[in-house]
Length: 508
Image 1 (spheres, one colour):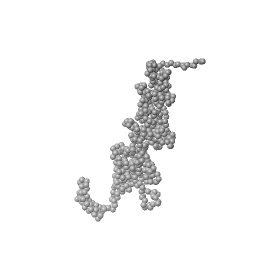
Image 2: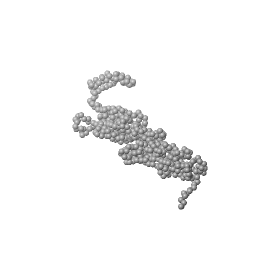
Image 3: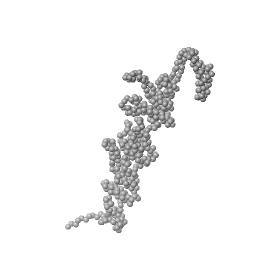
Image 4: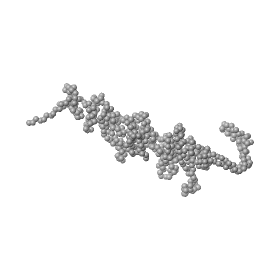
């Protein structure tokens, strides 16, 4: 009978082989062909180990083995071996920052576009982001699953407990988070909310310099009609918003505060996310200084924003608020500034800005034409005037201290409210009587009539009392005495006295 072929025997140096254990065999490493059970304490085993037989793979070879694993299960086996043997063989030589091969199994969540999110899907991380498996170096990934919204590689959940052995930090450093917000801000409001909620949990890690930098970064997505704008060099992922704004350009939308200025940007990402944004510099409402800068920057546009808000509140009727094109709401803003005048007056540049901008509301009575009156009402009951508004410089607005002069010249005046008149006066608005010069001209002959004599007698009788009261109230001595007045006073009656008044601003 033919002799069956004998298996070929390949001989190796002991240093190229590993001890014949199931653990090392499962890694696909070349092991010693050893009959029976391997006993590490036997004399034969000690002899082979002295010859160089390997007990465990070198760290570099093991990392390469994990990185180049042909399957997920094989990689898991090799990685588990690394974890189990870490304290025994690898801790002393393992340096996470020196690892050049990506060998750790991770997942990265990437943002979905709006179109990929179904209408019936609840906006969560899993519905707003797409999971992608990958390998990463220890310095490239993190262990906290909450950080997935920042699109960074995270250790697979089964390995997160071993993060300290791998040298993987729990959370990404603040510098990395700032770079994401600056270079790749979240264009979708839901994705941004999820990111801000995570950042709220990290607030304790931010330093003062980090908060200062955040105030200048355009990373808050806001709706609108402007072209998309980001920080220099940033690439927005989604164009579902109109603009990215800095925290100091935004205010929290609060339905309980009443009117919100359309001129400002209001945001609301929920109570948790708003905590982070508040720390970044988002305010509850515009400060008096903010109001001054916005209203004086473009008064007409600010007025238009008040008008748009007014129309929204009165869509169903032709209300007074609609007819005045938002002036009433604009006046409310001026009242707020008037109340804050003690604060505003501390800033000379702010005061100068207000004095030199046409942002104050001026009013005057306008005569109505017959065509403007309702034909269905008795004309006798209708007012013949309506209030007219416009924006003016403070120095072009008169403060009414004489209603006769007001009706005579119909100047542009301040609304007749004490708080507004005081505000206008501080900004340079003059009182009406100081703008009107007066001259008189007598016509006819002078006559010593009974009426003139009676008036002179009355003056002489009351002069002592009037002079005494004046000196007591003003603590000043009157140079003219009642005796002098009795000898020098002349009272005459004339046919007519003409009074001529001139309004200086218009020379009218």
